[in-house]
Length: 201
Image 1 (cartoon, rainbow, N blue to C red):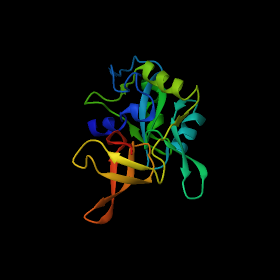
Image 2 (image 1 turned 90 degrees about the vertical axis):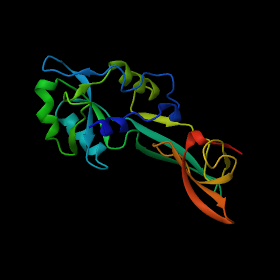
Image 3 (image 1 turned 135 degrees about the vertical axis):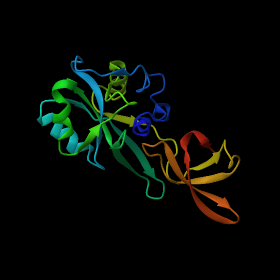
Image 4 (image 1 turned 180 degrees about the horizontal axis):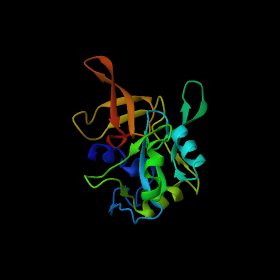
């Protein structure tokens, strides 16, 4: 389950969330005595919205943060907004674990509660959820500033491709990665790199 937990903790600085509390910090093992704590819920593929709606229908408090990226198509000069789950395949629910555990597991769109280690589901720190909510303005949608728009020229500043120039083909996604076209051996090659490895040329 550690691999599942790792997916919930991307480098939040990529989307302007640096300085907050990491979601994995100070995890407290959950027991039957826990009353209404935040837990990470793993959903079925592309079912974050379905799972969130179904959990809310069951009277549970849910936080399913989304990332909105505004991109400009250089050739057309048009701006479009793209929205996707901030943590694809996951959301957060406030639960009384002893009362709600099985109810959540059998909810349409839900795959399981995320476990950290071998002690069962672990409650997440309240301040981590509050930090994300603040970045979303009290809602669930975080607006990300994306300097690497389609058609923009960039250079690779670190790693084995450092110093090479490229053109952005597909702007940043929630994973924090950008697809670029780079000249290698006199031909353009598609490469996907972490946004932290790029800078504007």
